[in-house]
Image (cartoon, rainbow, N blue to C red):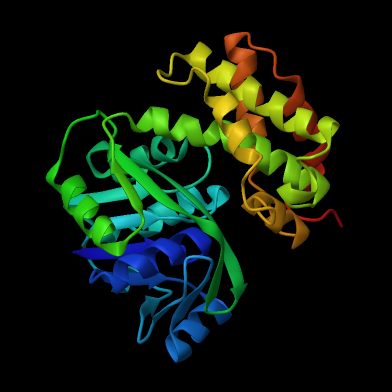
Length: 307
């Protein structure tokens, strides 16, 4: 199975390395010092699940050099979705599946006009990982899960083939007929964890024992669940409560990728996280004051640290 990983950060690097180790023919799209280090020393993934080294590694900064593949794991940041989508048209053949693994709930809708509805599957991941140094992905905790499925819920050979390889790779993999629900389940958790860890610039272990701070996690997640239910997404009843219980026992060092980006002075994905909850809440008549607070407080940092 030929796989292209578009965006070799914590998500793309972590899952791509696991699939390559399991025998997948994986090519990574990267750039700059990260790409140079990968070419010279391979791609390393280190963390609580153990260490992996893919060396030599197939890596390039030119998507046109990859050719048609079976699966595209599309893992760029949300602000790059349209640009990167246009750049990978040459990877998409009649049976290719492009699986966006971004945060948020909109990436598949944004890619469809560019690559065509037939090419797009839905996908979501659970992992805490980031680029620690060029060529090195650091993972926190042992959670490593991917859910994916056709947007119309049908079974498909391409989904079954990816599931088989993912199971060989050893991470939790689910081929689901209800990918919209899976996306929203993660989105409910992410709005809380991304917003609060970015606001405070602290990991969850330094936040969750304070009742006031925990209340902010709770409000953001419950608001997001209410928005999803108002939108008609099935299977969301009680999801915020489950996430809040899990938050109590999560690895204390976890910070959302948006918090890491903010600390580094990079752009942040706020418009598609708290911002999306707020806009949907307004359209559906659901109050979202906690998410609106996060949006207002972090908005000056959307394009990086203000000059």
